[in-house]
Structure formats: C-alpha cells, structure tokens
Image (tube, rainbow, N blue to C red; front, top):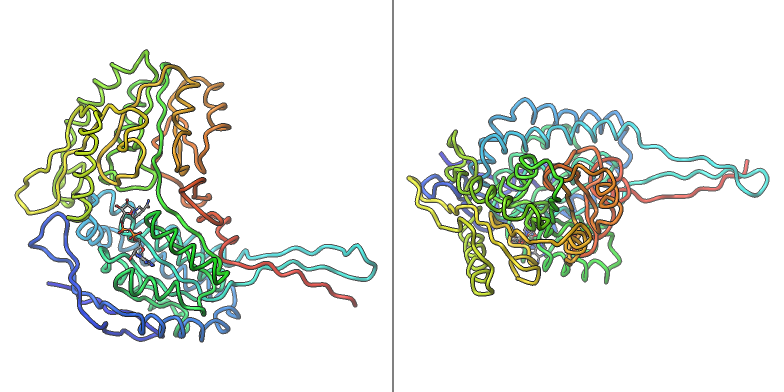
Length: 478
Ligand code: TXE
C-alpha cells in the first residue's frame, strides 16, 4: 500500500501540481509512496505563510516552544522502529542504521526543546554613566531549509529543531529521493501545536521548489546541505540578496593510520568509516592514509574485511551494506570506478554491480590503492568506494591528509599521545577523530567543516544559535 504524501502549507495539507513516486532502492517492485510535487507558486505560498506567522511564533513563550519540540522528539523516539523501517525502505541504509538515525532525530528535537528554555543574553554596564547595555538574541525570521537524501530524518531534524526553538518560522524542502521521510516528519510536527504557517513542507525538484526558496526575498536565512555545485549557486544568490546562509557540502575525509596504531581497531575504523551507510556520508573515510611500515599488512586486512561485507536488501537481517540510493548515484559510483582504473589506481577488491533476489542498486564495496593525485582520491564519490594511500611517515601522512579542497573531518589511529595531539592541532578540518571512524558524531556539539566543505556558522549543539538568531544590543538610560 502506497502512502500518499501531501505538502503542508499554512496549516493545511495540499496536493502538488504533479505526483511523484518514491522508490525503494533495495526493491524496484516495492515503491514507498506517491507524493505531491509542488512548484514555484506553491513554494511562494509557503514562504508567505511563514512570513505571516513570524510575529506570533517569535513572540511565543519558551514553554510553548519547549512543549512543541518535546512532543515531536517524544513521538519520534516512541516510533523509532517504524520510522527506521520507512527510512531503510526509502533511502536504503540498513535497518539498525536507520533506527539509529530515527532515534537521533528524536534526541535532536529533545535537545532543542530544552535549548528553547535557555535562550539568554547579557547585561553589561555601559562605559557611560547611568546607562545599561543589554545584548539579546532574536529570531532571524523565515528560514528556508534544503536537505539531501542521505540522512532524511537527522539532517532535517538538526535544521528544523533549532530553527523553531529560536523562534523562526520554517519552509522545509526535503530531497526528491526521500519525500516520504520528509512528509512523515512534517506529519508529526503538524500535530505539535504550532501556529499555522510556522512550519511548512514543500516537495519537488531542486530546480523549481529549491530555487524558489532561495530566490524569495521574504526568506531571511537559508540552510543547505547537499552538493558543492548547488551549494555555490545558493551562496551566489544569497549573497546578492545579503541573506544569511549556511552550507554543508561534503568531504573527502582522511583517516591516517600510523605504524603504532592499535591495528584491529584501525581496520574497524576504516571499514566502518568508509563503507557503512554505503559510504553515502559526508563524513565517510574515503582516503585511508597508511604509514609505510604497516601498509601491506593493512591492505591485506582491509581486502579480507571489505570482501567479507554482506551487501543486500536494507531490511534483510544479515545485510551490512545496503543498496546505493538511486540509479543515478550508482552510475556515478561506477563511473568513478572506471576513472580510477583508467588513471592507474589499483582495485584491491569489490566494485561489482551485484544481482540480488530483488531488483535494487547493489554495489560491492570497492577499495583502491591510489596515488594522491588520482581523481578517486580527490573528488567526493559518495558511494562505497575508498582509497588507500601510502605515506612515508607521519609528516607525510599529515600533509596528504590536508592536501584536499575539503575540510570536514579528519581521523588518526595511533597510540602516540604526541602524534594525536599534533594531528588535532594541525589537521585542516572542522572535526577531528582520534582512534575513531571519521563518521559518527554526537548531536549536542557543533558539526561542520572548513575549506570547501562548509560555509557559515556551525550546525548542531548550542552553536546552532549563531545561525538561527540575530544579536541586538540595547542601551537604556533610566
Ligand atoms: O545533491 P543536490 P543530490 C553530493 C554527492 C551526490 C551529489 C548529488 O556527491 O552524489 O551531491 O546529490 C536541492 N536550488 N551530495 O542530487 O542536487 C535538492 O532538491 C536549490 C553530498 O541529492 O545538491 C536537494 O533537496 N536547491 C551531500 C538538495 O538541494 C536545490 C549530500 C541537495 O541536492 C537546487 C547529498 C537548486 N538549484 C549529496 N538543486 C553531503 N556531502 O552531505 C537541487 N537542490
């Protein structure tokens, strides 16, 4: 049975201008939903509704915001198994990963429910006599939230929850590949007691709906996660209009493995970081940089572990690696496998398109030995494809780790406190992991990168207030 998913505009469920069908990447015979695809006009309606609700939501009490967000978090946590199943069907991550992500979304709403109670300010004495200075934080206004397909609950949650907690109104556009998850989240939020227009869901193509959010002058801030190319387009329009903007755009994250690393743990970190969630994570460890003395042994261990990973239907209990999200993404992965071979990277194992009992986009995890200049070692592939690169020593490994246009996350496996401390200091990334996979972060601390990976204030944790609020300085003379 297909769920029919409508848009949510100004407190009403609305059909779109066309109907789309959301597919199950594990099984073409099991479509997930029919969903309403909106257009620019409907997006403008949603933005106007959000603008109309600005004042009432900005003036709402912290208690009201807490209650709404806490309601959403509580329901998501109570339904995490069911929501995880939907996520696994629509996006293709394995069921345990999907349930974990649903739970994460619930935790994020809970976290920001409490943050709504903690919005504070500062009071300072003026340098002039008889004057007091107050520094307060106010909502930005209407925020446009544009999200990718790879974390269809968690990424929307970490944008929607702080937006509402800090008193903004929202126009949310999920990625076209995962509308059902976006709709499901909206359906829960629609029952949370928000005023009409405070939260709106529009669905459809990036070119129509996404672009209409970005172009609308009533939108005061845009938070985007997706590809670098679209992120740059969003930035251009936003900067012309002087709209506040926050971009998360992926990575090519290094995991450095030193000679003194706890060996099995380093292999676990590399396998987990490179291939889990089918490698479709912006924090995936796609460049595994290994010090020469352990290089051959590490390659052998990785070959054996990679080849033993079970790829299959996201809902099957023995699956470790789910399908690639779509045919287009599979084609991109296969194209990069071809590019890797043509440029002389050595395929160690995997990279085969697999047949399974159901018709899905299955690719066995692929491991290359690559040179740093190979495209497979420089460009974000966003699939189960990783490179191992040899480093002469630690200094060389650090230089290789930093030799990338991206800067989201960087990891190191070592027993040396000195090396770990040095790496934490000199890795050119927004996040650093020591003896941990590059993927897998906490929800209560900042998330974001440097260089080509991110632009604007950090997401998540209390640092989210930098983006979702504006500072006001008031002077009072009694
Ligand atoms: O991303 P897009 P896609 C990378 C990854 C992947 C590639 C393409 O390499 O293979 O991007 O994925 C909306 N104005 N990442 O096509 O197109 C779009 O509808 C406004 C890495 O999914 O950037 C969706 O909601 N919005 C990344 C969102 O932008 C537009 C995660 C992202 O879509 C738009 C996802 C426009 N002109 C993809 N065009 C990561 N690193 O986390 C599209 N959109």
